[in-house]
Structures are given as C-alpha cells and as structure tokens.
Image 1 (tube, rainbow, N blue to C red):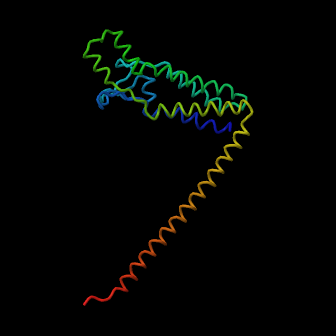
Image 2: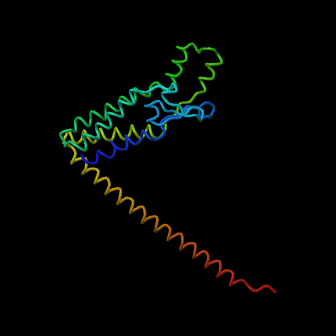
Image 3: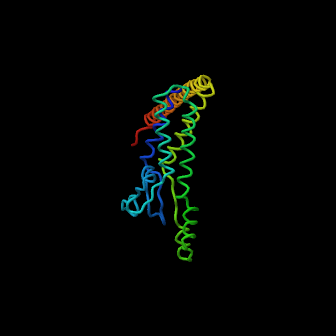
Length: 215
C-alpha cells in the first residue's frame, strides 16, 4: 500500500489545476478560479483574467497547502515506510490549510467583509444575499485525495496495511462475483424476453394463417 499512496497525493496536487470555485449572482458567473489561481491570485472576474499584480491577493494558506502536498510526494519518492508518519502529517496539514485558506471565500466571510467595509445599505444587502459560492470538482477532488492518502499512511504506520489490503481484495472479489451473477441474470432475462417475443410473433402468424380468406 505504501507505493500506492503516491496516486492520491499526486491527484491532490493535480486537482489544483482544475476549477475550484465559482461565485455567481442570479445564475451569472462573476468570479471563477482554479486551486492554483486562488493560491497565487489569478482569477477570472466577469470574463476578464486578473492576477496578484492587478490587486488580487495571494492566498498564503493555499500556497502552504501546495508545499505540504509536494513535500509529502517528495518523502514518498525518497524515503521508506519509516516516513509514513510524516506523510500522514503532510496530508492532514494540507487539509487543514485548505479549509483555512478557503474560508475567506465562503458566503459568510463575504458578508462579514462587506459589513466591515460599510456596505450595509438595503440595496447592497439584497445584492449580497443573491450571491452564490459554489465549490467545484477540483476542490472536492483535492480533499478526497488527501483524506485517502492520510488513511493509507495511517494504515501503513499502524501495521494494519496487510489486513486492509486483504479486506479490499475480498471486497473486490465479492463485487466481481456479484457483478458476474447480475450479468448472468440479465442475460437470462434478455433471452427469456426474446423467446417470449418470438413466441408472440409466431402465435400472431399462426392466427393470421388460420383466418379464413376474405371473399
């Protein structure tokens, strides 16, 4: 299992290239960004790309999360199983950093920032209430991959790796048997349906042949 931890770790890193967040109002996209975009202040606002030099801020929490993921991958390629605790630590740290780093983009945080800046008029509040923040596939894929990497590292560290692999193989074998059984039943059902259809066609033909000719 140790060598397979590289897969979810690598997926978590690549997930930063995918869409992470969109902010919309009345079904119109206002802002969209990937994980790297959020980390380095490169977002697309109203169809126009902007970067840190244009006033978009760097997100140091997400940058640290990237470094934690990259550090875990480095350990996986250069160290042995004795580094399982460090790999687990980098996964948990990256998860925590992502949660902290993305909090500023939640709707509650946006509303709180608007109140702090004095945007509390009725018109502003009505507009802000219509804002929707959606987390996209890259965000969820990064979280799930890091959780998977953390669980796998914990299994290696705790010595339950062989037991977990045996259970996974057993589940996979049971799933294969169940799939084969379902396929066989589906095939038999299809054959029965086809046979019934053929019988119905033959019965219709026989009935037509038995009908007296019209004068």
